[in-house]
Image (tube, rainbow, N blue to C red; front, side, top):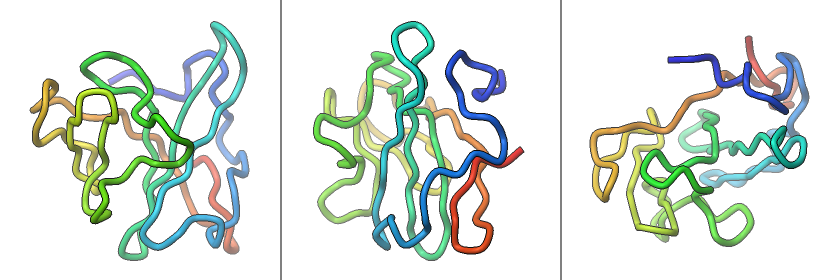
Length: 122
């Protein structure tokens, strides 16, 4: 898989995204870098003490997953959901378990938590 951080507009390794406390447990938070052709859209998911990041792009329609800001999770906060076609993804690895892109996966982005801050990993 091609490195998602090589895309135009992607943040560099070490870029601070937010304080860990800015993300509910469980919860999700979106981030947008750049504009136009250099736009890079991503989100963080926090659950069970772990923070994961994915490119905000449905592997079915290549559109953002959320319709409303930071609403990436199902009501029970057990899965990531695409609001366009209701595809469901596992939080732990981004794998689609149902919907039009079943069997495909979200593109992961490396992140790390350092001194209570979430940063782009390398």
